[in-house]
Length: 321
Ligand code: UDP
Ligand code: MG
Image (cartoon, rainbow, N blue to C red; front, side):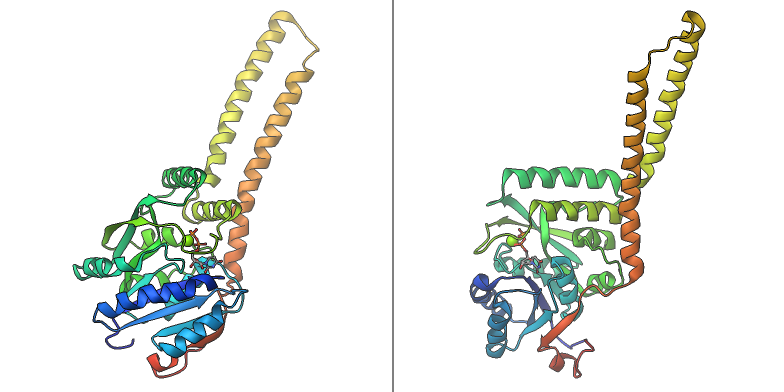
């Protein structure tokens, strides 16, 4: 580990060209004011605009800005993982490039860390610039997640938080491919603290989280922390069997009392379709998990690095990427 490097800031970036200048203009003075040794690890997550050239320019002017360029867009979670494993600071802070995570909060996060906390969460007191739908769906997701998974997620936080070196090391020991970072942060435990802030809207550009992508993240989150959706089918099956027995008893009694009644086409169809539908749903859930098992057993790397700048001098030898 690099001696005396206090703080690493890790920034995943995907098509953030309009934000690059403003981001560094705001964060560098904050870091300089700390009077500590720091580095900024930028991860270009396969941007199709000129984000990387802009970053190269920054790196030339300020060598403490270090660059990783992934071979394609692997998604924010993978980009963050790449950045975390290249960061060398005693404390590591993942931060978004769009200035939605105010850099001015960094001194407060560090202060809590000095008090002995391992994870210092930055929690939003407001969610400006977010739609009603996004807020409501976020709330529904937290409720559902905690009903099913045995961990408590940090409320109203993004990935903006401070992680101590031992938390980063612990995260590196979690090899899974489907990485809901917020779940992993909660899973590792350790002493957690909160610092509150007002979350501003994006400085420039568009959020890249479509409804579809958020939905996928929610499914990934639940399936990687809970087997509850798998187990529920035993109960659904038992319930349907119970109903079937009751209905059978009713049919037998009715036949004994009133004799054979032929009409029954409607009820047959209803029962048939209902049971078939329930079975298909169960199969679908099985498929979700099976697909994830498949992803995991392939053991593919989480990301591939195409280029890197600035890490060599930190460790004394080039990193084996
Ligand atoms: N990001 C990334 N890869 C992606 C999508 C996003 O590295 O595939 C980065 C993005 O550049 C930004 C951060 O992740 O720095 C958060 O993205 P965004 O602002 O779109 O998400 P939101 O703030 O809406 O949650
Ligand atoms: Mg954002």
